[in-house]
Amino acid sequence: MAEKEYAYFCGCSLEGTAKEYDESIRAVMKALGVGLVEPDDWSCCGSTPAHTVSHVLAAALAARNLSLVEKMNKDVLTTPCPSCLMAFKKAQHGMTGSEEFKVEVNELLDEPYNCGVESKSSLQIIYEDIGLDAIAAKVTHMMPDLKVAPYYGCILSRPPEIANFDDPENPVSMDNVLMAAGVEVADFAFKLECCGAAFGVPKREMVNQLSYKVLEMAVDAGANCIAVACPLCQQNLDLRQGQVNSTMGSRFNIPIIYFTQLMGLAFGMSPKELGMDKVFVSADKITRRITKAEYEKIKEEEAAAKKPQKAKKEAAAEETNN
Amino acid sequence: MDTINLSEKTDWAFIEEVKKESGQNPSLCYQCGNCTGGCPYTQYFDYPVSVVMRLLQSGQKETILKSKAIWLCATCETCTTRCPCDVDVANIMDTLRIIARREGKVAEKDIQLFYDSFLDSMKKHGRIFEMGILMGYKMKSGHFMGDAELGPKVMSKGKISLFSKSIKGADKVAQIFNRFQEKAKKHG
Image 1 (cartoon, one colour):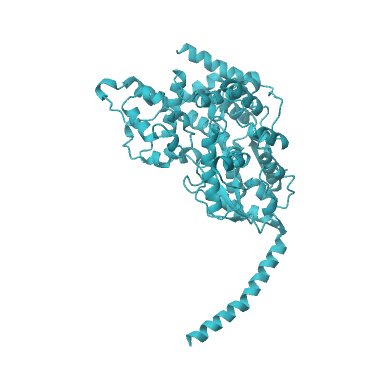
Image 2: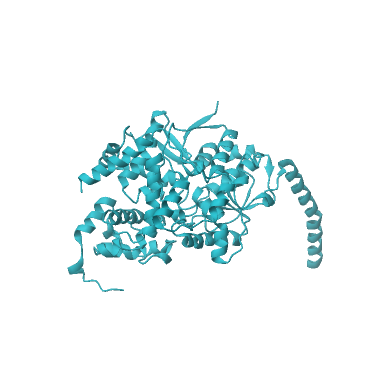
């Protein structure tokens, strides 16, 4: 039996265009001893479109799922998708903050929601509940060619009163998780800059222009890969990267990989199992793996080779000084 | 920029409506511009978000509801996060969209159509059927060729289904929409 068990809401994207996010999360959580149980017959969270119609409708569409979780006797729900997360957190915030709002929402539902579920991103569960030591202990392989820009997207840690996780201006959770998994992380200034969000279909060029900035900043930071935690960010940067290139006259060819896929690779899992074949810009060239033992041996040899050089340099410096 | 005669053209009822529905107090805004400074969409807005706030303080209902800005806001929450007066600016933008929709004054029809296709799919199936949303949007907007090159790419990865699948409780989800619409009708 798993040591920890959470209600798990994958959301609609992870059944479709973001399948590899779901596959890699399940694989990584299993390896870390975490059980994920889906609420029976869950429905769409309502996402961005619902809150352009009514806050009550949006909260009700989200709360239908939270009420399913209550029935499972679970008090924490984890979802990998920031948009689902925000829908749940806003419903919770509104319903606990105002009795009147709660009544209005529950009037739309068959089963009332009693506000007993806390929603957390899967990144938050991995970072806070599982922890960096447990992640580091699972690492069997290193990827020496890889340098990753961790890209959080807009709403994993914002607004702070609702997200209640990490830092709203400079989040570090994904950086730390990746470093614990042995992945080299770039200092990336656009961790939270918007990729263009859900406007890809009606406002394609605008999205391409916004995504361009994120891609360019990652390359400037010396990264050869961007790690993501959001299906929409992934889609705008990966599936639409060809569009970005044709719209902006750029030549990006940078893989956009879910942070859980990178964790899985470090845990020695097969690329296929992690859905690495489902991304559009292939990461094969930068995810060459060697075992941790091999990596440590190479590092030792490098250090040993540097030592005599260093001693020589010091001796030379001393001579000049004299 | 137009000159506005505040004593003649301030719609006080509109200010109250936004206050009530958003739970925010627009009077707290002292026009520091922090929201606009961080807004990733400001170059596409007809009125920067801090100007929308000023227009709201002066009750300029028509100008705001007919603006593109309120529809091009992606609710990225940067403005809300950085407001020194703790105004939930993104919530106000959201509320303005809701009112614009209710009054049939949406300036960015394509965005509304896309959202509507999304909600139609949700109401019908309980979950989102990505292909259905796209086709629904194309039919309604007339933009048949948009993103045409992406279809085969996504298909080749087996990521998008051609066939819809509904959850068992799809009717329950439709009920939520129906009850909402009935209530909205009742309250005018």
